[in-house]
Length: 121
Image (cartoon, rainbow, N blue to C red; front, side):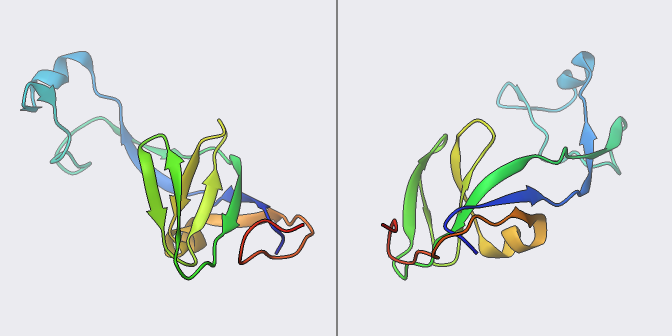
């Protein structure tokens, strides 16, 4: 694998719910709509969906001390073997290796030396 490779998220089907305006009054937590207890088994309106095949960039970081990155949710840290991801809008985030292996596939390997200590020259 190269320094930064392109990956595609594996197509998974999920259940999704578009909440009608009137339904938000049914489940309220701290004056907000709360979906913690909603499941397809206890609430009508779920549909089966598949996420679009979106290509992202990813780099597996193999530094023993781990790494950190500023994401849309603040500074987050990853462990050795986790993946630094760059999303469709340039946002950066971390994906654990176990989740990555289940949900992404390589679509293009970029030639280059695998880097374990920092950017290559």
